[in-house]
Length: 125
Image (cartoon, rainbow, N blue to C red; front, side, top):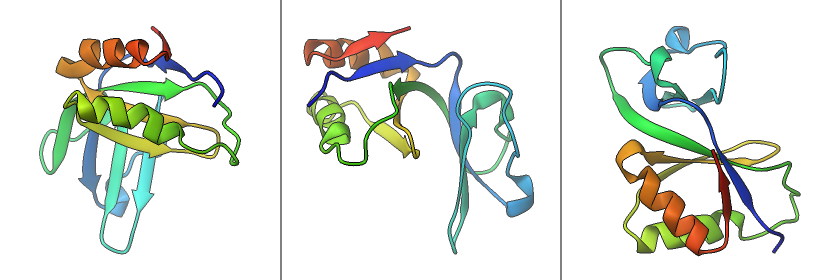
């Protein structure tokens, strides 16, 4: 597998559920992902956009995998998530057409970066 580089995005992130009308249309900066299913609308985005009440999970930081990644590439998420799982670090993952994003809790960030660097991944930011 080619070398994988990660970049720490600025700021805090949150994950929340909302109604169709409550989903933000844009974010000034960083990642904003709105996922709609038959059962829910989930949002991952800058913590400043998260509602003050309702189902909200705050306190995440976001690592972006340098992309674009080829669709033929295999094992990217598993190579990143496996060592974090062994270290007991929970993650939340978002994939886009070009790349993947790993969210880790703020309190786990330093340890997650250390684990990933020990595994040979470059982490900037």
